[in-house]
Length: 112
Length: 114
Image 1: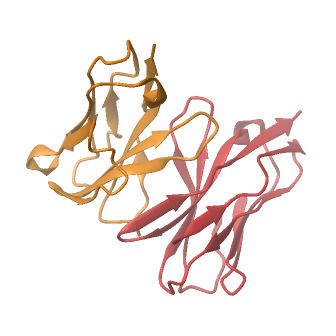
Image 2 (image 1 turned 90 degrees about the vertical axis):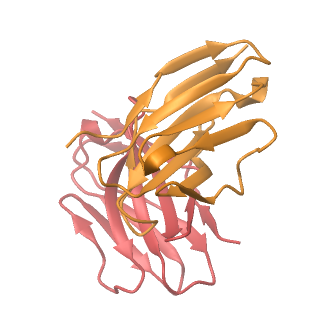
């Protein structure tokens, strides 16, 4: 069975600094997708970044980038130049067309 | 484009009462998901629809939970009777087609069972 592990329940980072959130997963599949979602205190979850497992190139979206290590089954999220608006719960998710598993999340605090 | 709409936003009921949640996905999205999110946890999938067909309901407690997606558009999730342990946020999400696509989430319904 697939599992997704986020080993950091909470993290803090100084505003304008860089922080990395970790995510590991366990699967025997070769074709899948990985996502990072952000859930601010208002509760509505939104996409941060998406990675296709068949692509070796790491996905980037402005200040957000991932370090995807397929062999190690690792999918970490790096947030550069942290901003107060980045404070939220971050969830890592593993999916195929027919299955989706979320991690338990990491709460990120931004210190002014 | 309009996002995923859910109602109600909050619901407080006594145990053994029935409750229903409604979701209207983004227009044109074939896949609809219902999740339960307990406090401090990640979403747990309850049921997934492809159009009007429930293709994964393995985690849906079928003795008390039911769902429908008539005409492959909006959906209703029902609990009858509710138990104390059902207190959670119920999230609805939709995607264009399947798990490979980005999911768009609604604001959720916070259910409190007293």
